[in-house]
Image (cartoon, rainbow over all chains, first blue to last red; front, top):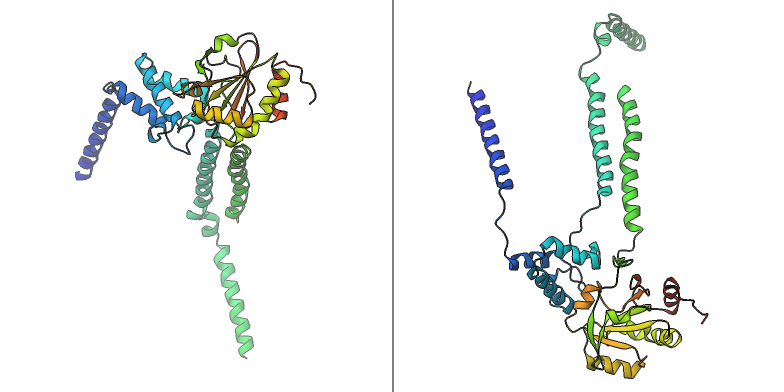
Length: 163
Length: 183
């Protein structure tokens, strides 16, 4: 009875949590200011003449030029996505510190996942006949008799050796 | 007995399933030189510019229409730029009537450029100042020297990252539709 109540409570809590998460995801984020958009873009774009630094982290001339370009384009009414596309059209995906992964890259991981799933299924199906021993081994009267015959023979031979 | 048999069968199923995709991913990943970044500008119209040359005149990309253009981003502080300079001088001398060469300074100023040209030779083509670096960004330049080969219609046909050698120059001029004479 208590167990059932606990289950119900847990289920209600889970549903409530999921509902809160969905509402939060659906609620539109407050619009970013132009300065916030610019900062976000600077952090996303690679500084062309640095090693693995974002534009935001660098003070080189080209990083400065990209910062200027970001501000100019946002001021001209471009969306952050359009600004990002502008740089990708010139530098390629390389300019993004986190480029979008190509879809084909999923295929090997899917195959490995399928192999792992297959492994689990095979292992389970291989183990189950062992867990429940086949009735032939238990019910055949011949089996205990055979064992007894072997034991008897061993006893006879040991006696023969002792004698 | 039956268990070890299924294991054996299982192993032959799992091994190719895991190994083949991994090998494929590694083959593609290691077969690629990560320092080679193909320019997305190839096949696209050249980004426009309007910049001041070292001699004070203004040159706009619109003025270049009708003839193939070689746009060379360079700097006086860049050793490979000095290395490729003789090739550009030779190219300008031999094809100057059919090709326009334009230099754009990358992160450099007029004084540095003048020193470089007096030391390594001035080919007589326009060298443009890009103090804000905005034109370099428009061309997706990551560091000098980078050279763009643009056809008569203003479409980018090739890009060389690093110094232009005479072989690179011949190949690129051929893609621009110029008959390349044997050196």
